[in-house]
Image (cartoon, rainbow, N blue to C red):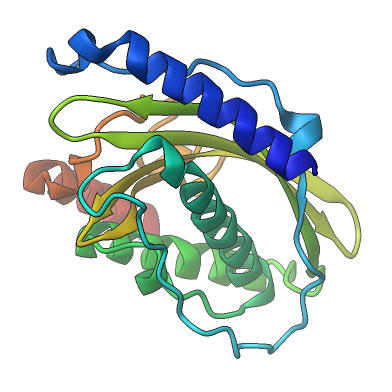
Length: 232
C-alpha cells in the first residue's frame, strides 16, 4: 500500500511538473520534480542473502515508451536501480556475482563497475573483512528528477543502509537512467560515501547530470589513468 501511495505521489508530481514546463522542454532545460521526502513510505527490505546463490536470471527492464523515459517508467527505473544496488553490495562484501549486463549497456561504464567491484572485494578480502557478511539492504528514495531536453533521463538518488552480521553502514548513490532500444538502462552510477571508491577515483561531490559522460573518450582515458595510479 505504501509503495502504491509513493508511486501515485511521484507520478502526480512529475506529471504536473512536465505539463507545467512544456515550453521549457523545447529549450532543452530540465524538468525537475524536486526533492521528494518519502523515505518512511519507500523503504524496500531486501530478502536475506544466501551465500553462493547465483541462480538469479538476467532480466530486462522494459520501458513504457520505447524511445523516452516517461513518467510511467519511474517504477521500473526505481526497481532496476534498487536491484542493481542490492547486487552490488552482495558482490563487494559477499563475493557474489552481479549481472552488469542486466542494468548497463555502455561498455565503458560496465568496465568501470567491474573494476570497482573487483577492487573493493579484494581490498575487503585482504583486510579480513569479508567474513562479516551482508545480511540485508534497506533502500529509500532521497530524490527523484525527470530531466528534459534532447536526451531525457531520470535522476535518482537512493539512500542504502547495509546491514551486516555485525553492524551496519549507510551511503547515498546517484543514478542516471535512460531508454535504449526499448529498455531502461543505467547510464551513470556514482556513490558519494566517505572514502568511497567513486569519491577517490572520480572525485568527491561530483555533479551527476550528464547521461553522455561515459561516451566521452577523453574523460574515460583520464579516469582510467587515475585507476591505474590508485592500483599502484
